Length: 213
Image (cartoon, rainbow, N blue to C red; front, side, top):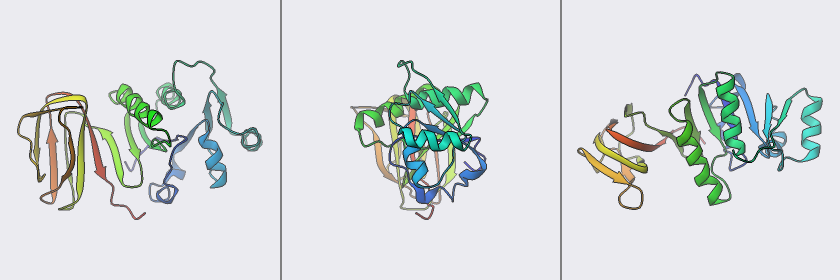
C-alpha cells in the first residue's frame, strides 16, 4: 500500500527494519498504548498515542508530551487499543492503513487482532505487515503479480464459499473453505501471477511482500 493515510503501531512484534521501505514518515503515525515504549527506543515520534494507557510507561508519556504528541486516554474496556485506534481513523477519515505489531507475544491478543481486523475490513482498507507477509481480507476478488514457487495462504474467517483460484499449485474451483474443517494455507504460486475470487464469507490472504528485510 504505497498511499497509506496512516500507520498504526500495536504492542506486538514490530518489524522495524521494514519501516523505511514502507516510507512511514510521510503518514500519520498512530500509537496504541504500550507500543510507545518501543517507538521511543527507535526514535519514532507518533502523532497520537491512544488507548487506556495501562501499558505505556510514565516516563515515555512524559517524553512524548514534551514533544507535543497528542495523548488520548480512553478508559472504556469494551474495545481493545487496536479498535480504539481504528475508531480514531474512522473519525478522521483515514481509510488506507498499515498495521505493525499485530502479531503479539500472546496468542489470544493475536487472534483478537484478526477479529478486530474483520470487523473493520469493509469500511477501512487495512493491511497487517509482519516480517514475511502482508495480511488482509480480500474484497471478493483480487489479482496480482507473484513470483513462481513462493508461498501464499488463504484462511477462511470462519467460512468462505465458492472460491476459484488461478496461478496456484493447489487450485480451487468454486470450492469452500471453513476454519477447523478445511483451510487454504501453505499453497504456492505456479506462475507469475495469482487471481482469487469467491462468492460468500470472509477470506484472509497471507501474501509475501518480498521486501528486503
